[in-house]
Amino acid sequence: MNKILIIEDEQRVADLLRHGLEEMGYLAFVAYDAEMGLRLFRSGQYDLVISDIVLPKMSGFDLVKEIKKHNKNIPVIMLTALGTTDDKLEGFDAGADDYMVKPFDIRELEARVRVLLKRVVSDDAGLPEKELTYADLEVNLLMKTVYRDKQEIKLTPKEFNLLTYMVQNPERVLSRTEIAEKVWGTHFDTGTNFIDVYINYLRKKIDRDFDIKLIHTKPGMGFILHSEYENQA
Ligand code: CA
Image (cartoon, rainbow, N blue to C red; front, side, top):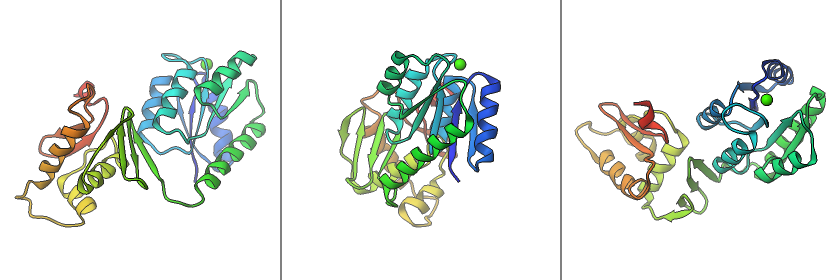
């Protein structure tokens, strides 16, 4: 089932969208401002985003730019009550794939959603996901490359696998046991600390030269990939 994220501060419009999309068989989630939209977007795997332009806390244009930084392939439809050509151009500049002027017919929106979702499917042609992103990290699974803030970071195969697993499971505490099983395919004696060693190698390469630290330790529990972890502590 396709997951759609709706970012719209007008409750009435948000409800209309959510109900309409749910009736068509999509899973729909609503954020009422840009910050909440970004947070939901980062913590879930969505197939499509519908975003209003005039939003509290951040404009829809900036929000779409952020979203596209995380995942440049995700289709985005922008909504506006204004409908001027300037708006439309700015929306496309920000990376929007399509555009709807309010008030709109929900069936027309559904048709556009369907077209965009189909395009993604045919682009991928059934291949597994090639590129994972989290914050300013980009992991290319085919090329086995890692970039942070556009700078390439060289990793060993084990470090690469560990980072991939963390990027696939962001903002969630991963226990040492879980990491050992999923990354090394082994159950291990709890006395060993090889995971801590690899986490430290990764930290040196991924975080040392950057202000925002992504890899954090949850004492006694494990490790977490999170771009805003300090703020939460
Ligand atoms: Ca609005």
